[in-house]
Every structure is written in structure tokens, then in C-alpha cells.
Length: 165
Image 1: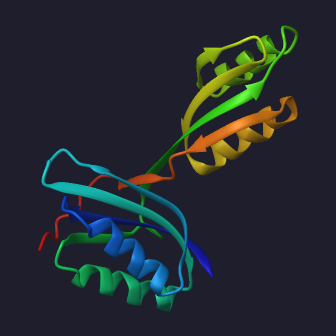
Image 2 (image 1 turned 135 degrees about the vertical axis):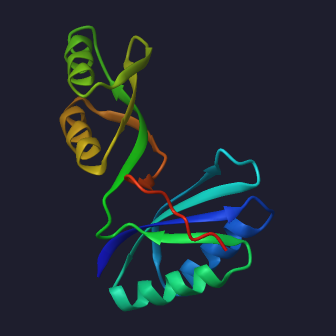
């Protein structure tokens, strides 16, 4: 079993996300992250899902997704040169004494302080999975009050998808 990031370019229509997510879960895939949003073309959306699966099951899944009427393209980023990012917004406990340390860590990771209160700091951070894990590991000792993550979005480097139906 291996972790895979799938990207599906789909028609921006009612029910498409539900059918894609239903097909993935119906085939026994645990969806670790699921992200959907519009593209530069208002008629299209991009669904990005991170799933754990073996190669054979994932291949069957990709072929099944590709047959959906509203799916334009499906891509598994495994073994493909790509860029993946995730947004994390985290509220960290802080005191007058620890606030500057937290801000310094945020600066090291090029994170953005978006709110400062008497007892907490909210940080916005975008990065790949390893950078996010490293950042969260460093701030964990201060106390994470709340955390929200978007899940990954990904695009292939260089050439774009070009096998539109």
C-alpha cells in the first residue's frame, strides 16, 4: 500500500464531486485529503485526492474515473515530476514570553502571522508535506489550540495535461 495523489479535471456540475468521492470510497480507498476548486475555466473544476492503495487497485480506479462522463482527465502523480502544496492555518498558544519565538519560527518557514491575541497566535503556512510536518513539529511544544488544513493541490511540472476527451 502506497500513498497516491490523484488529480481529476472535471466539469463544474452538480453531483460530480459526490460521484467521484463515492466511487473512491466505494472501492475501499481511504480518502486522506480531498480538495476541490474552480480552475481558470469556469466550466471546469479540479478535484485532488490523496488515497492509500496498491498499484493494481489504483490503476483500476483511475481507469474507472476516466470513464465518468463529467471527468475530462485523471492523473496519478506517482512517479511524475509535480508540485504539491497544502495550506495550514494553526492557532498556537502564546504568552508574552513565547510570542517572539513563535514569530521567529514562522519567519524561518516563510509563514505568515495572521492574528495575534493575548493567549494565541494564528499562523498561515503553505508548503509541501515535509515542510508542514517540520513546522508543526516545531510549534507543537507551544501547544496547538486549533488546526485547519486544506489537503493537497498538485500540478505536473512543465507540460500540462493534454488528453482532453
